[in-house]
Image (cartoon, rainbow, N blue to C red):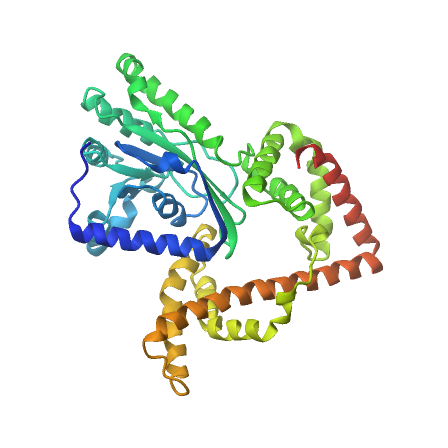
Amino acid sequence: MNRPKINWFKKAFYLFLKGLVILADKLFYSEFKVIGKENFKLNRPTIVISNHPSTMMDPVTVAAQVNRYVHFLANAGMFQTRFTNWFFSTFFCIPVQRRTDQGKRKFDNKQSFNKSFQFLKDGGCMYIAAEGYSTPEHGLKPLKSGTARIALGAEDENDFKLGVQILPVGLYYTDAQKFRSKLVVHAGEPIQMSEWKEAYSTDSEKTVDELTEMLQEKTEALLLNIGKPEHDSFFRTIETLANAKKPLKLINQYKRSQRLADQTRTGLYEKLNQRVERLIEKLDQISFSSEYIFRRFSFSWWHLLLPLAIVGLLVNLLPVLLILILEKTLRLYKGYTSTLKVLGGIILFPLCYKANNWLLSSFWDAGYAWPLLWVLYGAVGIFSFHYFSSVSLAYQNWRWNAVLSKSELGKEIQAEADQILSELAPYI
């Protein structure tokens, strides 16, 4: 099979970035599972698509699972300056215009499509965020037709002899922007373009629409399809209640959330929405989260290690504060929060760890052991995060018990949550 020609420097740079992404994913997410790993072993021209809830994290996380040098179809707005045009064009990106960005200006992606056709002809693998934009809600927005047009167009120019395929991927985040949340990457079966040859030669536009519809269905089956964006608050509430009442391992939690999403789409929303809205309204009155109605603190031996948690807090506090300040100052779209945290962490934590070593050198010269110290700083930092998260849970439990004992509102909330869970029992 042909492969795009990539020089040794670009290969080394790509592998460095891929290693960085894998490390960042392991640190940022407390659990990371891949379903369908075998489908990421690609040996032919492929377009990889996925849902897009977390801007920059989605494409790089998906690409890191693939055994190829993945290129990205990227928003042309990223190529506007001389430097960014050189950088993204040189390092694995192909620009594409989005109709929503062009307004009344002339809209023409012919050059981008031709580059994509040639790239696939050379045996390349590319990632496309087929929704066209990032959105934090569960579910999949209607896919743009560009993925189907590129895949079928490349094959049509080569008499359907390239063997192009499209790999649908679903991403499930327990919270796409939260540090130490959980992530499931679910790869489906590749869809072969050779099967569409006859239909495309008969009616190309109809075939593009039909393939786009199939991609929509195949990708929706790999994630949480709640139906409508306005169902998102409802779904997040019932999912939180289910996870708090009956914790499961990540893959089982993902499958349960899929069941709840399917039920939300097919009638559960209409059945329970008023009750869930009442619960949310009552919780807002006491500034309380539905997560803590059923989730309970459990003391363990590691709660005795408070001094270690304090050390972890002190050696990691400065970069965390700087990232929080950046987040508040920049006021970016919510979908960029995790990207900011990861990129900020990649830059700021090493700088602060170097400063820690410099301060420590006044008492002890680490010599060549400084990399080990950096690992220890990170390890105790993660321990500290989980320790104080556990302390926070204990505090929320105390708050909830106080509300229950002193307020009729607390008893109403508990009864409402119990009734909702009784309705959800067949699915959890």
